[in-house]
Image (cartoon, rainbow, N blue to C red; front, side, top):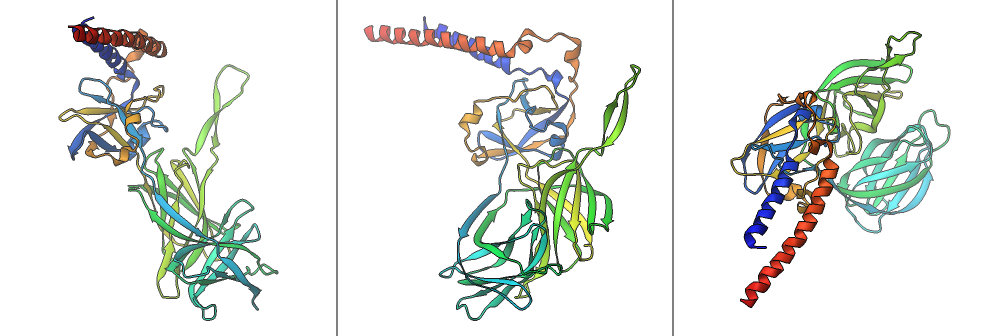
Length: 444
């Protein structure tokens, strides 16, 4: 076999692969133009917009990028992550005592000066809100107040909030005072105290519009309830921030979600007519957390008004935020806003080549490209900035319903198996031919 014939076989194989990469666009509802604006490198990076999440599937498996010739452009989907370094200390607990007010007190000895900015206070019980005071010292004699009043919570035996942020300090000793609630007859018990040095680096976020729909006060549970609607569905919301007008507070907050208020349920009937009734969709818990604002001993105002959502939690279209006020007056929530960490699409960019993004296919399977193996860290590669145009209807959507599917569309798996077998067989012939050519060249 000559070199020219081997080259012809390779061209045929490439053509076969390209034909498989061709996409039947009738199965995709929406499209948007992709333009490359600036930057260097052989790749392009596109940040997904809220509209993409609203139109695409939840798993984003229906995203396709096509070049001007209608061939698929390989891509990798990656989501930036927050980075948190957390160094844990295990100080000795000394000087356990109870003061005249029934508060439990312990002193932590770190053995030397160490930098820290967070502690966790574990105390017995499964339904409480206890005030905590934190003081620091280097000689275990004279103590200085760092946190005059923070709180630890236990909602039930499964849900508790024990972390308290501290001013960055290097005191050798910390004294922790946990006060009982007014309804508690016995002094609380401090089971354990852990300390940490926490450093955080947050990924880039994008704002998400939230529209307030309802606000009510539940007098029975002394809770404030707010209902909001997000601008789009399926958004990867990473945090929700509350704008609170009050000066000093500490509250437990729960966030629940659902995609619709009601759903239709089929009703059995004696005749053949279909009947349905509307039933309310139950709220699903997303997260629970605490918000607070206080002034420390140095006069510095400290607050945490952001409810952070783990990346593993799904955020729904409608959000219900419940603020438990205990025996305090309701808070004044002036505004709620959200932010999301958007996925990035890193793709092979060709100079001067236009691209189109397609989304909205319920039947598409997740594509597999060799690019995933080549890019171990897609967010670290040098890439050009790509921008997404307006999302519009795909004019070709639904055309396949009026014509039979091609054999290659009906039997994709079988086609890939046949192609794999052909590649193996032809690969053997090519290898054998190369060896034969090299042998003849050596003999000549």
